[in-house]
Image (cartoon, rainbow, N blue to C red):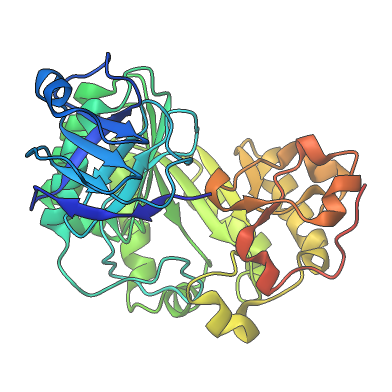
Length: 378
């Protein structure tokens, strides 16, 4: 699935965020007109869109911001929201027909996880991403039911982060918001207090915890004191009934103590709303650390089963993400979720013969780099 394309930009120097329209009759001050062919200048003056996207070369004499000579526009639908950059890049920010939309807040992170699928970049991009998202949020459809927040580490935006959360609450009061964060910033009480001030009951923080032993967690995230900061942050949040999900990526380092970690969570954090046990994505840093991380999911099913039922039996909601049904014992199927975002989700040839195809979450696109030896249609 295409989320980015490029053409030649003219008539603007700053970013433009707007909603796609393929019709001349539904234009407002947030509309970016998508046309196969350039439109008449007189008509353009009468409708006055925010910008234009077209496959044709620019043969018009007008001053409206435009990106022309774009190779492909087929991935853009009516009411999708896009970002026009002055270098001609067109980024899709929100897809109106997808349940897998997210706000990307920063490429920076204060951890450097061995299996990070989005390796951090050490540059201050806070102002840029704040500007993009502050333009995006108000024009997201009001009937949006779910939205993700991701990075990098979103809390590194500081006050910008909380401004965006307030903007989400004001503009999308019904949307369920999942914020992916390592939770470390909330070890500082003033940061937790700012989140409490937002007061959005539809917000849940998805925080990774990779071991019950501090040294193992810190090694995986490649950051000293990360375990203690994360745990303190979780407790600070829990004091104010902030909703929390714990996420555990399953790999060679986390698997041996997975059940012990579940026991640690139940005994010390029984207030968490949900625990997600997540299959490994072969992307970002993971291919470089594959020898340290890879274990065939088929080989850890017994400990996964014990962990799932331990949490379930003690009343903690638990789900399995990113593992196809053919690699799970049948009694774990009720805990499996279709979790992979549609833009990086695939099904392989073997899946076409499977009776459970419609119920299975399939694979990451990156699974072509490394996959289980036990994939077999059901």
